[in-house]
Every structure is written in structure tokens, then in C-alpha cells.
Amino acid sequence: MAEPAGAARALSNLIAAIDRLARGAAWLCALATLACVALVSALVVARYAFSAGSQAVQELVVWLHAGAFLFGLAWTLREDGHVRVDIFQQRFPPRVAAWVEVAGGVLFLLPFCTFVVWMSWDYVAASWAVREGSREPGGLPALYLLKGMLPAAAALLGLQALAQVLRALRRALGGADT
Image (tube, rainbow, N blue to C red):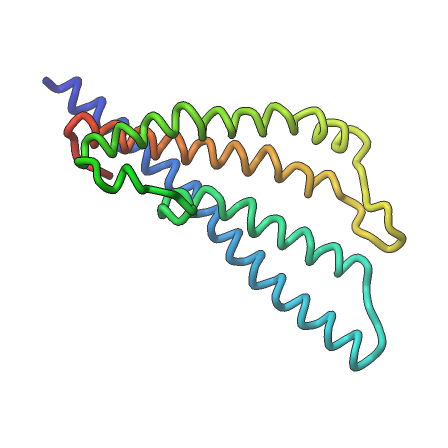
């Protein structure tokens, strides 16, 4: 009897650890959004008040924007904030709905995350190998960091998808939700 309780505790700890990782990414998302707004405001003032601009700062805005979206994915999944069409699932009993969640995660979301990591790996590795920089004069020198966000965000989303599947599986089997 102690082993199932220990396994349940280990499962809860794993889910909580993944949720903490996603929460950390959400903080990065929030900081990137705040920095993006500040930089865009500064660029507008610089352009209209001083007729000045910066290619590097413009690129940084794009990078921050990309980072905000990519690193917000996992937390948005955790908070059930993604767009969904639940025309059938909303009518299902809770345990059946939980099985639909498990199936959706296992059949669609986890394979999608794996596919994104797999497909972006060589692209990102090639960029890191040459320490790729911006092609624009005055641009940012470390474009490989931006490209590295692709598999990192997909892996983080995949981890959160795993946590969501485990959470739904627990509900489907009649256990408590975490």
C-alpha cells in the first residue's frame, strides 16, 4: 500500500516541478513583454523626437516579441488558455472528458512538440555552429540565441503537455486533480 502512495506522491512532485518550470517561463514571457513595450516606446520617441533609430534595438524588439510568445506557450497550456473547440467534450462526464484530454495530448500535442524539436534541431545547430548573427548592418550579433528558442520552447511545451496528460490521466482513473 505504501508504494502506490509513494508513486502518487512522486507523480504529484513531477507535475509540480514541470508547472514550476512553466511558471518560470511565464515570468520570462512577462519580462520580455514589458521590455518590448519599453523599447518600442523608446524607439518611437527616438524616431519622432530626435530622428534617430537603431537596427539593433528594432531587432531586439522582434526577439523579445518572439520570446514572449514562445515562452508563454507552456504556461498558457497550464492555465488552459489556448483556443479550443469543446463542442463535444463539454457534454461529456468528467472522467470521459479527462480521457479525451489524455488522448489529445498523447496523439496530437506531444507528437507535435517532438516534431518541432526534431525539425528545428539541425536548423538551430547549424546557426549555433557558426555563431550566426544578423545580416543587417548594425543588427544583433547572436541570432543563434533567437533560433535556439524554437526547440527550447517546444520542449517546454512538451513537458507541460506531459504534465497535463498525467493530470488528466489521474482524473480519468478517478484520482484527485493537482
